[in-house]
Image (cartoon, rainbow, N blue to C red; front, side, top):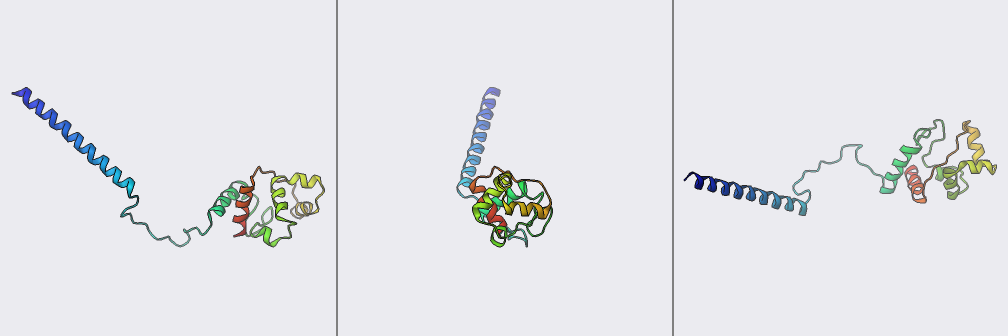
Length: 146
């Protein structure tokens, strides 16, 4: 009699565990099909919503990682402010900006007057030499243009 009760309890336990597993599996599948269902999304708090495009957001990350130590967007630091740099400053061309960021030393070696004027104005010997792709320079330009 005792063995029959033990077998019934064992089978009942296995059945209960399988039932619970199936319920969790079914619930997980429902959540995967309807993400965010009945999820409250709070409205953005003042100043927390980003109005930058995806390209400008990537540019901000590049700026913070490579440029922010010497440049600020809206004020001069050890180097010129960069907000609207290509749009507002007398850069010879957009292609020139690409070259300036990637290999400023080459411009100094070629005795470029614009590169020399910037270095003379800020009295420094640092030369930009970033290995940015065209896409990364575009992202950076998108960010500093905003």
